[in-house]
Amino acid sequence: MSTRIPVVALDGPSGAGKGTVARALARTLGWHYLDSGAIYRSLAVAVLDSGLALDDVDGIVQLASRLDLRFPTGETRQVLLNGVDISDRIDTETCGNTASKIAAYGPVRKALLQKQRDFRLAPGLVADGRDMGTVVFTDAPIKIFLTASAEERAQRRYKQLMEKGIDVNLADLTSEIEERDRRDRERAEAPLKMADGAVLVDTSELSISQVVARCLSLVKG
Ligand code: DC
Image (cartoon, rainbow, N blue to C red; front, side):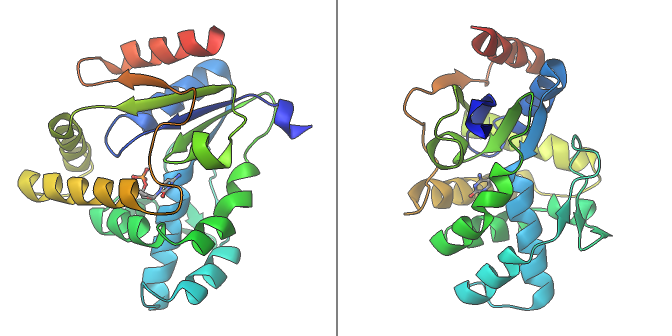
C-alpha cells in the first residue's frame, strides 16, 4: 500500500541546498518531509553523550535501535531526543562530522532504515539525504540529485552558520566539507551517488526559488 504513496528523493552533497529546497517543495505540495540528515545527526548527539567510542559499532547500533526522536514541527530542524530539545546541537560541524563517521557503518544504516521509511505517509513525501533514491526509497517516482560547486557550498554553509550565531572560519569549513563529502562518497555502504534515473540539478547559479520551480516542474511532469 505505502509503495503507492509518491516520494521525491532529493540527494546530494552537503550545502547543495537540499534542506531549504526540500522543505519548500514539501510545503508547496502539502506533503510530508523527511530530513534524514537530522536522524544521523541526532544519533551522533546520542553517541557523543553516551561516551561510546566512534568505532563501537555494536554499541552505536543498540543506541540507534532505541533512538526516541520527535520532529514536533515537521518543518524546521527542531528535534527532540528522548524528549529533550537538541535542535541547537545538531547543526554544528562537530555533529555533522560525527554523523558522517557513524553513517559509514552498514549495521548503523540498517538500524535507521525503517525509521526513515515510516515517514512515507499520504499524500506524499519529500525525502532529503544521501541515499534516498539509491537505498531508502528505490521505487521513488521522482529522483533528483542536487549539487553545486564546492566553493559555493562552503560559502552557503558559512552564511547559514554565521546567521545562527555559530562562529566558523571559512577555510576550516571548506576543508571540513570536502573531507565529509569525500567520506560520504567513498564509503562502501550507501555511498553518495546519483541514483539511476535521477535528474541532476546544479544549483550553483540558481536562486532557491528557481531550484524549487525546477523541482516542482519535475514532480508535475
Ligand atoms: O544532510 P546532513 O549534512 O545533515 O547529514 C549529516 C551526515 O549524515 C552526512 O555527512 C552523512 C550522513 N547522512 C547519510 O549518511 N545518509 C543520509 N541519508 C543523510 C545523512
